[in-house]
Image (cartoon, rainbow, N blue to C red; front, side, top):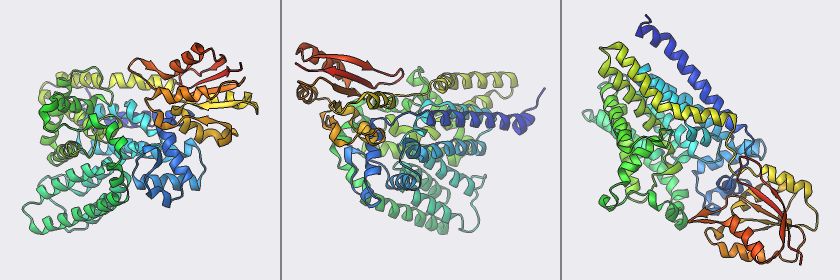
Length: 507
């Protein structure tokens, strides 16, 4: 019979290496799939491509927001390499791949194989983490920065929870890491809050060390103040963004929506692949993991709890929405707590070795099977979403000088980004304004202006579909009802939501 020590020494590291390699393969597969930039990516890309370095310090067009450090890194990348989707997504994929390795280091430092392997599997196969690793957005950096800060803490503070390093040399890297983090990740301030408060608690009986930690936190605050003056104050004043995310701010008083808090807590894990579980069961899993981690590594458990409290506090103040992609930075915490819950099961049942092993295997299977199945399917057929390349190839091949091109407002940013690559300039197409969002009338008015033309291309992407209305279908029905003409050709690549129509509107 293989002993636990033998498994920990050899097989656990071997299985962890396989999981890391599998996670890297899934991320690189999605990155290299050739997927076009979709709406949000294209809007951010236009800001990066069309501005110089200094211009990125001004409020971004298209109601976009991103950390200034991330924007400058993106600009530097395309300046050194070339403009293109692979180049624009390169910083995100590097951050996402490093985050996977960093998460392994975090788990290896904190949990035994009973908790490490299930958590690593859930992280490696998470569809959200895989997808955002290959997207031109800052959310992959949010995960990477959070993990980098946690590792700095873990490798500076000794294993013994009541012991501190001698000297103060360890404070400098912590100071520099925190000061840099806030420029590359907005939610890094929550991780820094958790780490700073934990350090204050650990050093509460050492006045000299308490002052040193206070100076480190002061340095973080000064750096954050710079970030606020440069970019965060303009984001907080953006009415569109505040309205868009309003449902994800914690209600005050909390009894205005009693379901908000448990639903959001449950979402922190279900968002990463644990779908179909009742909220109460997910909450028990997270709480069990927090209790276990508080027992085996109290300082890390305290950081996790304080980080979440800081995030919820900011949400209650209307400063940070907790939902959707804005929750991605919580992945190391929620998935880490799921792994700690697995370890807790093992610790409770360890006197009956076979029952402990079977229980952990069953829980790990329940946690990661759905994510792994989806990840395998996405490896075979990567997510294309709003893949504009096939439609633009058709348009470029069949375009005539007398043709008119109308681009639906949802596809305008991506088309505007890709137009130069396919030989089109601003004079050759007519695009709906992004401000048309949820307003069908302006789009129909645009269609009216296309009358009396025998060859009109209409390109749809990111079609608004809500409340029983599909604007693409509404536009085509409008054409039929007014007897403006007919669409002679339709093009749609399987797996993408981009539509191209060639219409004859001649009288």
